[in-house]
Image (cartoon, rainbow, N blue to C red):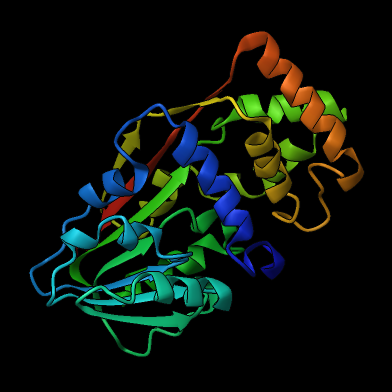
Length: 266
């Protein structure tokens, strides 16, 4: 993953919008995620890839005053955005520009570590999981959300039919396949004895071509050297998507996402 993809929140926001606006599950993703977490009364929590702080922003009422939270992201722009959004939260939240695959533990131990939709971006997943283990206290939990390799396959098929190439699937195979709902359990069990997987039921029913196109364009810098949709084809692609919506009323996109819960025990 090149820094340009997440240098600012723009690309992430384009993708988040599609899920938030067209999801069929009326219970929001970030609230569902938070419901899966079990934190001790005086929790020390670290999150990698915090983005714009969405997880905490949508669960502000559940944050306890005696929690200590460290939110990190490799993008300074994301960290600044998260800091601004969470400035009214009444607990100890620190912000740091940091990357999971190069993070130095420094002896600090945490009761929980969170990495949502992060591990498939990490070049060396094994090294990242080893870092997480070193960061966790005994009986500490690691929460790692991801998607299946079949997630949103209809979207990739539509793009491929228009472009005549397989670039979107290549990105999926090069990125998502590193750590997905399909292979994450096997990877986590090398480091954690107790691992659970919980899935979030959802789908998308997209009715606005601009939102669909913006999502696709936001994926252009997801993987070095692979372009999903050329800039000079964006206008024609929008017309193509509009025609599909005119005929069908909406574009159905299936989803398969969830989170792993791994507990550090001996």
